[in-house]
Length: 417
Ligand code: PLP
Image 1 (cartoon, rainbow, N blue to C red):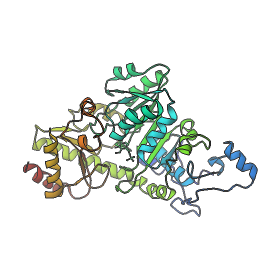
Image 2 (image 1 turned 45 degrees about the vertical axis):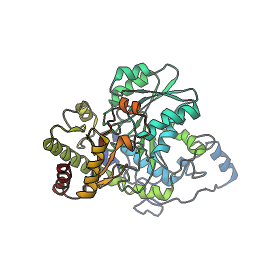
Image 3 (image 1 turned 135 degrees about the horizontal axis):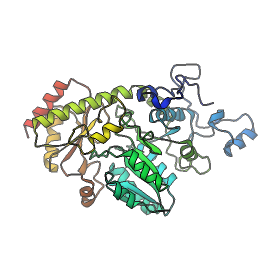
């Protein structure tokens, strides 16, 4: 049994605003509780031995209410996956123990030894390290890094018969380059290449699968959880890709075991319906800060796709869901690591503007000097190629407190520089 649907998806789901989809695959609990139930069992019994054998042959499964073992498939985790898939507009989804395990499982599923990935040169440092070192050294999967905004470079990097994945972030961490998802998908599909998009920076704002991507991955640890208290990930895509990942004989979720705890899936499920409101608040606050910072110091380099001067401002506008802004992350370039550190120290310790921390999507503002933290695994040449300046501070804008209070805290610290 797939669970009792409360607010069933409609035939014209594509037309439904993304915030309505946030509850559209919400499951009622076992006794008609208004929250879904937690299936805490790690193993499941069968009505007879024949059903047990058929389950292992893949002849019966979740559609008929039959589960085997929670390392690769648990009903509560599946429910959360379907809830996130509803937002992303994909056929199905599943959740994992972290964003990195979602990314690595998908790449290992879609690529074989000797295979090739084309990836954006600016990515979250962990993803960059996975592609640069781990996949190459341990699995003989190589990657060509490209400027994701240069469509010709992307196309030329694909090797016929060898490239199986084009991988990029909807908005790159930390340089905030916006990927042209429809055009990139067209290029990749013409060459038989699957498109995998990390949508961690823009849940609700962008729906990459509706724009042409095959698989969407998330670090739930960020905006989706919203409280900086959870490490988790999600994989959304068509059943033909996601279902075999849970194959009880050789699926990556079975053999690698990046398992999400169903109790955690339950907890995250309750946060998805207000993700829409939170994203709107993050976006609005970020836009306001960026506008004021530009007025305060017109010479300061500020990166934010909401600025008209941003090279992909119109592109993001054309792709984004209605009534969302341009994301909750902006960057300022303080030019040197020393000046970046000084500003962050003042912002945290003198004016209490926010916290130094590497994550994002929290209700308070988090700030980090990307070059020496989240992207410190890149060598100097890779950082330069990726456009990560040593003094770049990434701000993940929170929404608590009044704007006036937060702005006075920012200006106090900035005036002391
Ligand atoms: N993708 C992006 C864009 C990230 O920023 C991060 C972490 O910072 C990850 C993936 C990895 O997610 P997790 O920390 O949940 O493994």
